[in-house]
Image (tube, rainbow, N blue to C red):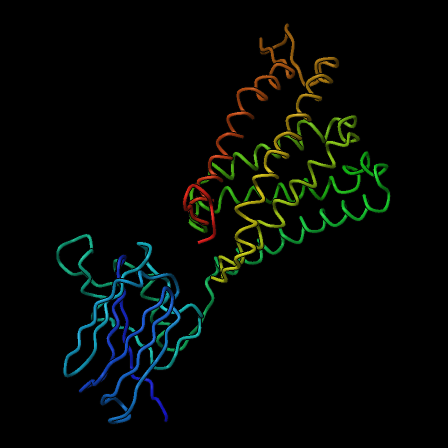
Length: 366
């Protein structure tokens, strides 16, 4: 039996979705709500006359599946659904392509209760970008969001860069064994510096609203790595040839080879349980190893700098200023690295609990 699609009009506010199904004389409606899906089926009178009507919607984000309100009248069916997270959705569906039967309920949108002023204002004044996007969507124009395209290419490029470093380190080590360890920096050092400099963009992403969160955590991680690379490795050939440099580069790359694919999967709403588990579990081993390697490099450089007095400024000089780089490294090692390590590990632990879940004192995937 053929099932026709009724016209469905949608609107939203920060907390809820509103769906109006254009069906008259509805009989025996079936409404099945899942976390990201809605299934509807009913007999009624629509654009095709008195027929069986039904549709399915894959939503852009998650809903509270246990909270729905259905109101049936002679002229329509109204659904009110609660969002799992309080936010504005850029569109209703998970995919950019909009079904022909899905329309925008502009009348509902213009009468939201949570506008700043008590009097209702034109939505074009309050949310001009959102209104323009909805207009384009209504007339069949589909345009991928620039931020999404940019972040996709950025994450893909960074993944390829770190995958290249990981592959080179592993292949060279399997081929030459421990004889390759002193050559790690010479082989991939310039590539590592390049990708780490590009990572500075991740400090700007939350500032410009490209991603959620604040710039503090990426600044701490990226700033610390650049300090290790430039101030401790780039200008100290003795440390470049130490095995610890190989293990540091391999640890950094392993972290990013997991992180960037995870970001891409979340960007396109493609949840992969194995990738999610790796993202929020591998750090338990990799982060302490990385911090240990960084600490060894700073400590070894401290000894060399103390002997050579490199990058230090002594009196007398025209600025009447003194600076002892070895003392700075001591302060950095004790007062910066250790608190930064604790902060970052606690941040990842909190994120792991929120993402994977916790039952009976043990973490497990939700």
